[in-house]
Length: 115
Image (cartoon, rainbow, N blue to C red):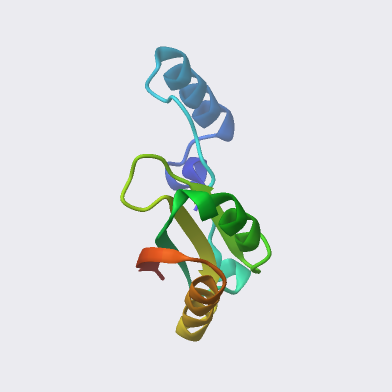
């Protein structure tokens, strides 16, 4: 629901308050939050994986070829790659996890999901 509509205010007033809070340092950034259900997905999964450093570059390159997968390099953590994927169902998640394990020398992994 639109904030202005919810609080019975004009969009100009909401925008002014937003800019005032930004100038005051109360708001230091903004992000987009997707409604994955609106795109036809049932959820989002994050798969944390650990790959030995010598295989990191080629693993990240392989991940770009898997549909609906975004990957991020992490530093100084137990897992050095975060794989974020949209899923239609749990079978999709199992397929992605299987592809990851078949194509890459993963030493450890952990999965988190959100529906």
